[in-house]
Image (cartoon, rainbow, N blue to C red; front, side, top):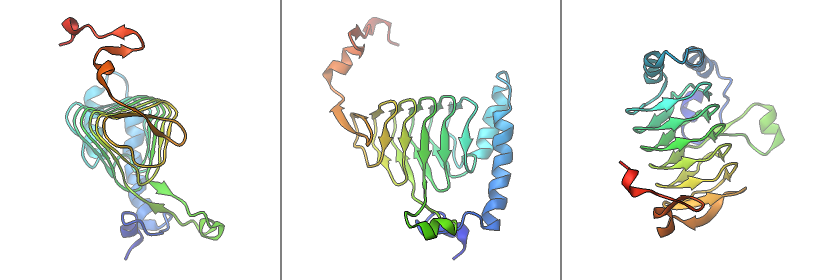
Length: 204
């Protein structure tokens, strides 16, 4: 089995393998081009994203700078996904993101890990596990999502949280390590922020 195959099955592998590095370099050329587009070059950004990502849905938008080990080659976006400034996807293996999910600034989604045993790290070994994020999620600014985590649908992850284990659907989760704070409830249908009420007459 090649090192490239081991990237996607959770086995230890060497990311310095020539086949992997050659592929990564090609991906990073596209990422460099994307990050150096001008604000007026929206069409060019969309064209580059379609080349960079494994799948990019309709109406997706990424604010440069965007950081990614493989420029999105292993990332699958649904429709209407938004990434604010400075989002990092360590996409050494697959990242799946559902429709209408938003990432705040400086969020990190990491699929890559390194062994605790020093001798293995010294030799440069790594392992990867996929991350899955559901639809209609809001990942708050500065949150970190680690390898192997699944986040359900309609989830809010609080700013600065470190998500180390799976999070179920329809909850607000916060903290380090991130845990469920509460379920999304009836009060959320009335108030959008603290005591600020939702004006239903103005919602399209």
